[in-house]
Image (cartoon, rainbow over all chains, first blue to last red; front, side):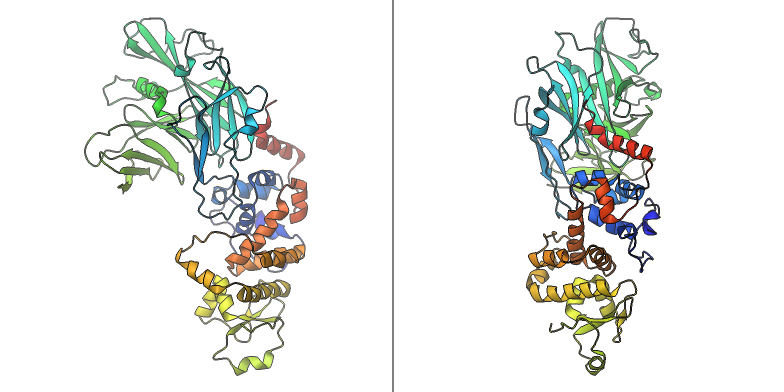
Length: 374
Length: 186
């Protein structure tokens, strides 16, 4: 009783110094947090989820980042899609990195058979994944470019949710696929809710256009939005837009942004987001994003890391570290989250990798953490 | 190895062979004495190993104030059974892979060992194992308790763990909805 009432968020919660040698009226209520976490680490994800409803102290313990690492819904492994397999229905695979199976091993239903039989699900195309959740585009079987909806699922628990597409379907002649790019944002240590971040890429009629940027957005009814115009060819103007879906509200919201305040040093013009958006839409860049502190991070084409807060539409730019070899990067690398820190990984010119880490999230530069040779 | 004494009736014989004893005497919170093989104790419990190495073992009974006699008896019983039934070579040879020994499923005898325990005795034992740093016994007992939770509703889990529901109806409804994020498909 005594112990479980201690706030589990204390940095050194639990432990075996629990001062309750004599008791046993409230059997497990008195278990030290560490011990309870030890037990919970061995139950399947479903039971763990249910256990949050047992008592507040249990919920706090299960959600405490200190213990979360050990609890079963933390997958030790990663999902991947074999790029060598062509076709729209590449199988999702899961590579387990679980060295010791102290917890009950999770069965990962990568065949998605629990999903594909559901009514309304037609062709699922993998789009993104984040902390154990997978994002698919659900498309018409007969017209594979027609997006019906998005599907988010947890292949370990067989839980799934449908997210409606936002806006009307694209015109029939538009290959819509090339005009959207989605990120899934899910951090189970913060919330069991998820967000979808959608970058749209729309063509507009030729219009008066200066400096590659404008705020005007004439076909909208709800104010000023993040709208960037990009002059692709003479007379043809493209723009990118940012929409965020929240599983809390069940709604898509068009995000405003202060990106225009960001100055570029890279000579793409004062407002350099075209490159950023462009980058996001290049297919081979897919999944190169990292979720940390509720922010979505990814590498832009102008060699920086952009971070956007999906809830408050605040942004941050982190410059990429300089290459120790004093050469420019061969191509943009990867951002990744590990142990609560942002990492940047890039190839060396020859064999090997550089791995950088942003030790302090408030800092603006990353330090070199490791060099690996192959 | 030949230790199978259990309860503390060996008061006189203890002092005789103090120098080369191969057992240690442990004293429960309620004052009962138990003998256990020194080798097994040191191998299975990091806390006892530390005490043995540090010379803080009391030959008249090392006080373990946190552990009741029933739990301590089970601990000692487990140590003795372990010493007798596990080929020690297997454990020793695997000690090279420091700290990454894979968790093995409980052995048949370990399963039986925890299966015969009463509910309270099991929970007492898991705490004792935790206190004494007995990783293997902790594995076995935690495994058993986790099995008791599988497929159970929150209500049933509360019953197993003897926990009071401190959510209000509204709070419970809210958290249920939150957890059901993936279930609102219609």
